[in-house]
Amino acid sequence: MAVLIQQQSVVEGGQRYRNLAARRILILCCLLAALALSVAIDIGLGPARYSLGEVLAAIFTPDAVSNQLRVVIWDIRMPIALMAVTVGACLSVAGAQMQTILANPLASPFTLGISAAAGFGAALGLVAGVAVFPAAVQYMVPINAFLMAMAASLFIYGVSTLRGVTVETIVLLGIALVFTFNALLSLLEYLASEQALAAVVFWTMGSLTKATWSKVAVTGAILVVVIPLFARNAWALTALRLGDEKASSFGVSVRRLRLETMMLVSLLAAIPVSFVGTIGFVGLVGPHIARMLVGEDQRFFLPGSAICGALLLSATSVVSKMLIPGAILPIGVITALVGVPFFFSLIFTNRRRAW
Image 1 (cartoon, rainbow, N blue to C red):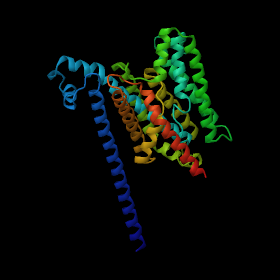
Image 2: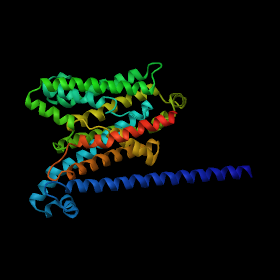
Image 3: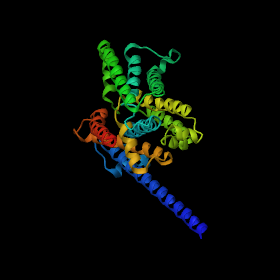
């Protein structure tokens, strides 16, 4: 009898797990459908507005539409819409993994100063012509951004491994890095020529208007390369949420996992910043939305974070075109307006839990 009861409980537990997995997969599919709709709306909006049917016709049957419509959709609007998707996914996945390895719900490339470091590195190339890696001068802007972001990430990682360092210390350290790199960026702006100053200001506000197919390809390639690496460590990253000691008891090399993840996060944070500027809070808000919808299991949390970040930035791109007719507002301004209240809600929620 006891064996039968035990077998029945195992079967019921397996069924509950399958139902939970099916529900999470359904949520991911709904998010993908919402993302596709948001991208279609984003492509249709602009000085000349097109219906959803015209947009779909230009995408799937470009030879059957007018040359003007085809050029507007394929050469101007689609790179911007897809750039929002790839950049949002990059920043959200980066934030999700930072929150995982640091056990810090407030961690993201923006709040911990990684985006500010990447922006400063890119500005060094634009304003002063300084290449951190002289062997590739022609690509000094994205390479500068990546190396500075990686340096900031390694610094944060090194401090987090010190004895007695708490989550609050890491957050304060990130705030200090943000102010430090912003101050250095302001100094470069003061010394910059008018042309270089315009380029730096474009970054600090964050904009998708200069998106091109080549930039979309680069950010998309980063996702294609990095996400499988995270997926390979999905079980280890999930175990890390239980604490370092638990993860180590499961055979996870915690120190190596953190170092590898931080380097990949630097890549995800640096490349988008070098192309579209500093876009804040996507890496903070996207992972938390995904966590509320699909939980902590990295098999669902990782794609969920990518889709939520892409959807968030795509929807923000739509809003940036609708607020002022005929004008496109800087997308970084809108994400900040959305992210700051969310940031405060996280602070007060964590404070109540601490009490």
